Image 1 (cartoon, rainbow over the protein chains, first blue to last red):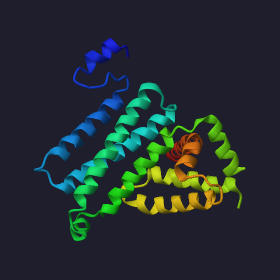
Image 2: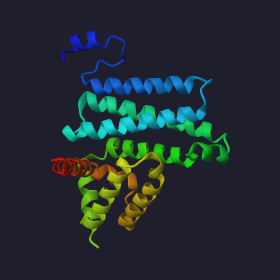
Image 3: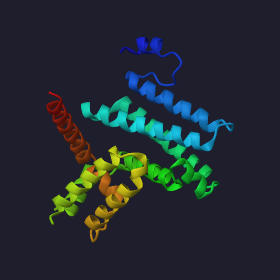
Length: 146
Length: 78
């Protein structure tokens, strides 16, 4: 889609995106941000929304990469969405540490569930964006795998 | 056990980690980490650096496995 047309179709978004799926994901992440900032909303509802955002992100990532590797603007937006989810998850962990384990058992998840999913996102980030270079990559593969 | 078999197990666990329910991630991540520690011992390489090195192999593994699962599903439907 030419940029001039995309701007007309998506006048209220921060990114001038070509892939409408990214637009949907961005709207979900923005909604989660609003929920996190709203002190009237219950913490456990915020966690449930974050898990939903995480699953949408993960499903979109694997479906999108079934077609071709992420590159260019897609990769930039992917990175933004990933770091947004990581920051939101870290905030939720801080909030959850103020609750008793009994509270968390009642709603069906522990703080460790949230921590392990934030770790999962961190793993996604480092494995994709750590810059090791081709020479170093080959050396690691040769040394570890023989 | 060859190192290639160990890598296959790591890629399979990485795939599980990517596709499991959020409440299962803690357990699968633990198994994933143990496999990586066993493979990397005595090499001096860290987990993150190793995963960055094999990330391309993982995305290719995931693409092929998902394509195979779609083919199997289609065969089952027909």
